[in-house]
Length: 198
Figure 1: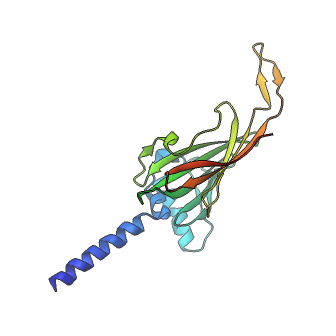
Figure 2: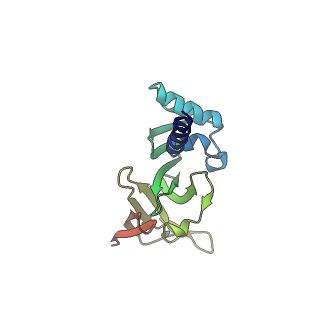
Figure 3: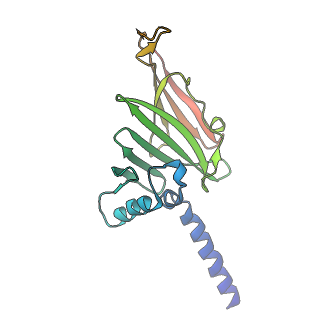
């Protein structure tokens, strides 16, 4: 009887640990500094609305609406405001541990600019360069993740205008490049797969 009780306790612990790896649960535990506009209540409301088959939206701290477009056990797409959004994706490393990738995108005059960050499952920041090599920082870049394959598509464009020393706008030669990165579980990082530069 004692052995059975111990086995059941271990089983419950394992189930709870596995369940805790769900991105839905980690979204609820996400520190507010990762997404300052959403309070804990806002995140709870989004998940509760999903459970009740309602639109996954909430009135954020700026008193506008934020909407979760998609929320699964390993992927989330959050529209924070009309000019900002986040994508989150769970990734598995070669030792079986999981990390969270967060892509934050802001739109300036409809021009997107994304940044990529990585976190442990207890939301401790990880060094980005250990997992992904960034495009040149002086260019705009739009980063998206495939929710199924985890592939990253990075579209890099230069700014359409640069200010000269006298403050006038100087048009640049248009530039655009698209790179695709695949997640390598063996190497525990993103590997450049396709480079399409004109």
